[in-house]
Image (tube, rainbow, N blue to C red; front, side, top):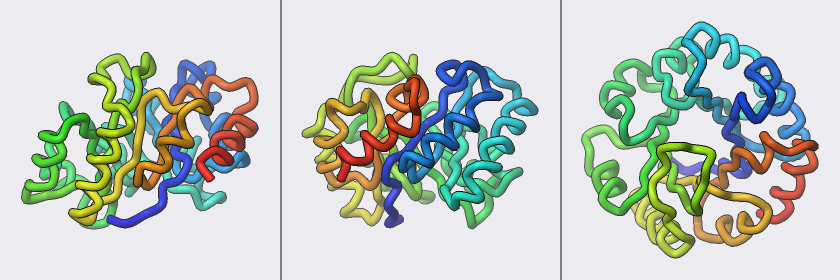
Length: 211
C-alpha cells in the first residue's frame, strides 16, 4: 500500500515517565512534526493499555495523525485502528480475520527470507517495518542490525511488490537523513523523541534532517 508515514513515533511508557504521561509527549511530538504514532507497551494489561490508547487518541484524532497499535490485535480491533505485528506474533491471516477488511496491518521483517515469506502469503501486509537498521537497546528482542545498504535493497523489493516500508532501530539525528534517502516511506524513532527533554524540538530537528 502506498503511503507517506514520514516521521513515525513509537511510544515508550518508561521513557515518558509512566503510561499516563505518554499522551503529553505525543502531543508535543506532533507539534514538532511527527506524522504517524504507534502505541507500544509490552508491560500493561489490556485494560490499562486500552486506557493508554484512548488517551493518545484524544491527541492524535484532533491533529488527524494516524495511530497504530503495536501487537495487540484485539485492542486494535476494538478501536478500529491499524495494527503492527512482529514475526513471533499472531499470523497475518488471523489478524486480518479479527480486524476485518478496513484497518491496515504492518509486519516487521529483518531478513530477505522474512520479506519473501510476507510477500508470498495468501494474506499480505499493508506495510513492512524493516529493522533494526542500527543496533538498539530499545527493543530487547531486536535482531542483528541491517545496515543502510540492506535496508535499501529490502525497501526496493517491497516497493516492487506494491508495499511501502518504514525503517526502525537506532534512528536518531546522526543517521536519520541517510536512512530517509533509502526509499522507505517513513522513519521510526523511539528514544530520540520519547527520552528527549523537549520532544517538540527533538521531532522538529529530526524532521528537518529528513527533508
